[in-house]
Structures are given as structure tokens and as C-alpha cells.
Length: 433
Ligand SMILES: Cc1cc2nc3c(=O)[nH]c(=O)nc-3n(C[C@H](O)[C@H](O)[C@H](O)COP(=O)(O)OP(=O)(O)OC[C@H]3O[C@@H](n4cnc5c(N)ncnc54)[C@H](O)[C@@H]3O)c2cc1C
Image (tube, rainbow, N blue to C red; front, side, top):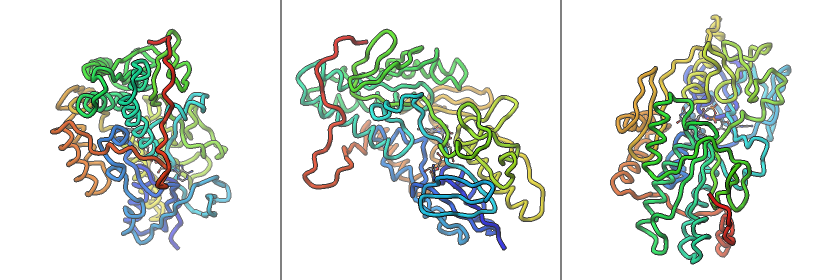
């Protein structure tokens, strides 16, 4: 009898594990995800800034796994896990298992301020990217018909909170979007008026990279017109803007890129977690005391001599493949192997022709790094269709400076339902930065 393997999460880690097990045909696999699609999160900022459409970077999980006869997909949300009884409980039923692979990823952390989420969406799902896009494009439409320069300035001020890779990529792309469309498509907006402000709590952007690459990234952002403010923490976010220690920035659009926390399901497992809430796993990615349950990707804390592995797609993918291989080894009566991460370097992109990349100490910033970034992202996109469409979209945007996905859509669908404005234009706010 083939063992039942339940995988929670069809992201980078879970999908790789399902593909490896499916290819072998030696296990009955059930992949559970609360969404029907696998999402390529590294390009989500391009959906938020109207370069790409959601379907260019997402693909139905069911479709990816369709040709593996022994893999079934359930669109359900995992609610709890009974590790002793070996059962996953979802919003639709119970799934007994012989092996469990937990790969539910992470969500945003607002550092004890959940009320900020409404005012400053983060970038983790298609819905969030579309909401950021809707708010940004609507702000331009409102600014076009606004005669009060203070209100217009507030509408056209975008604050990105967090200077890690997501914040830097978002700020660079927003600046390009703002300056390109303000100059060409609007008649009542001064092209110099849109502002993109990047707030970073530490003393440099991209703190994961070497200081010289951080400096290059900051300079590249500033060349694009982004105002980079270092050592600045958001003290409060209000419908009017962002409060710092020493100033208030009136802004209609605030984007959160400051922190993530692992999936909530970790808390109910009753196993040791690290400070961030990640499950501390053993050398084979299994849970101490529960060798049949593995935790991978952003949910897991895997120690190495230089500290825990970061929340990156290659980490999750390699762990997914490794855990699947260990399950197959065990089915064949062989011993498990320890996980070893193969570091393929890190990269971050700033707009249409600049990236920074660090490959084992070989550090590059500029156009060549950007070409490498393009190549790697196309390679790792799931689905041939998506690769071709993204390439065509990028080429078109690169040559024309235009954005192909500038639609303002709302959740309302009835014909006469008004498209909601994100936040009402208000009276000018005096204290500003
Ligand atoms: C905006 C952004 C940009 C990024 N850029 C990069 C980059 O350039 N390079 C890089 O290496 N990494 C990048 N990352 C990080 C990378 O995306 C993650 O490290 C990676 O996705 C982790 O993979 P995972 O399998 O652990 O989780 P995910 O890929 O997040 O997948 C988790 C899956 O679990 C599902 N799920 C969650 N909870 C439940 C539940 N209770 N029940 C059922 N299903 C559930 C989710 O729907 C999701 O499909 C970026 C992340 C973001 C958000």
C-alpha cells in the first residue's frame, strides 16, 4: 500500500515536493491549498505597478499537477494539525496521512498594528497587488480632477515602508510608473509632482546585501526620483498619511513592505518555534519527535553555521525536493539524508535596467546584473505560456515605456455599482515632510 502524503501549500516548496513525488508514482499525494493558484511572488510588484497581469505570474495548481495520476489537489484551508493522530483538519474535512509536508509560507506582520493593514496593504497575494494597483491608479484619476494643490500633492505621494528587496523593487517600479504616466497621459498633473518616498528603519537599504551594493541600490533609486529616507520608522499610519518621529508625510498611498511572519498554523502545532514564529526543524527538515512531519520554506527555521536560512524561493524549492526525496528513500528502505542548501546567490531589481546581485562574494550592480535578473526570473516562472507572455510584456514595456495592465478594477461587479475611491480627498494637512 502506497503511503499517503499530505502537502499543505502549493507555493514554491509544496509544489516542488508534489512534482517530485508525483513523478515517482510511489505515493498517494494530496496537495491542499486555500487558493487555486501557485503564485510567483517575486514578480508580484509588477502586477501592483501595472506591468503584468495576475495570470502572467500565477498558474492553477491543478493544471501544473494534472499529469501526475497519484496527485490530487484540494482547494481547502488547513485549520489545524493533529500530529499525534496524523490528521490534517481543513475547513472542509479531515485528511489522514503517513507523511505530512507543511509548506504554508508566511504572511505580513504589522508589528502589533493590525489596523495598519487597511491603510497600507502589503504585497503577498494577487488580491493585494490588485488593490495596490487600484489605489495607485485611482489616485492619479482623482488628482487629475483636483484643483487644490495640497490635496493633489497628497494624492500623488506614495510611501513605501520597508527598504528590503520588496520595498526597493516596489519603490523603483512605482517611480517609473508615476513619472511615465504623469508626463504623457494626464493634462492637469505636473509631471514633477508625483513623489515616491521609501522609508527604511535601518541605516541602509537592502541590508541582506553587502554595503557597497546597498549604496548602489540607493543611488539607483535616487536617480529614478525615489526619496530614500534611512533610519526612519513609521510611528503611525492614518488615512491622511504616515507619521514619523519628527514629521508627518501626507500621502494617499502607503505600501507595507516591512515585515513578514510565518503561517498562523505554526502556533497550534505545540512544537518549539523561533522568535519570529518559525518551526525549528531538524537536519532532515522534520519536526523533532514527529519524523513523519516535515516543515519547509518560509514556515521553517533551518539552522546553518551562519544562521537560519532566509525566506527565499530557492530555499523553499530545494527543501521541497529534498523532503520528497527522503520520503521516497524511506519507501525504498533507505536512510534519510540531511538537507544542505545550495546557495545560488541573491538579487534585487531597481526599475527597468538596474539590479544588484551577490553570487558568493562576486558583487555586481548595474545593467549586466539586470540581464541576469531577467534570465533567472524567466527561468523560474512556472509554465511556458507565462514565460512567453512575460517576455513579450517586458519587451513591449522596455521599448515603449508603457504599462499594459493599467486597469482600475474593483470587487464590485454589478453594472451601476460605483468604483470605490480608496480614500477620500481631504483638506490639506499642514505639518509635512
Ligand atoms: C513580494 C515578494 C517578493 C519576493 N521576491 C523574492 C525574490 O526576488 N527572490 C526570492 O528568492 N524570494 C522572494 N520572495 C520570497 C519567496 O516568495 C518565498 O520565500 C517563497 O514563496 C516561500 O515559499 P513557500 O513554499 O514557503 O511559501 P509560499 O510560496 O508563500 O506558498 C505558501 C502556500 O501555502 C498556501 N497556504 C497558506 N496557508 C494555508 C492554509 N492554512 N491552508 C492551505 N493553504 C495555505 C498559500 O495559499 C500558498 O499557496 C518574495 C516574496 C514576496 C512576498
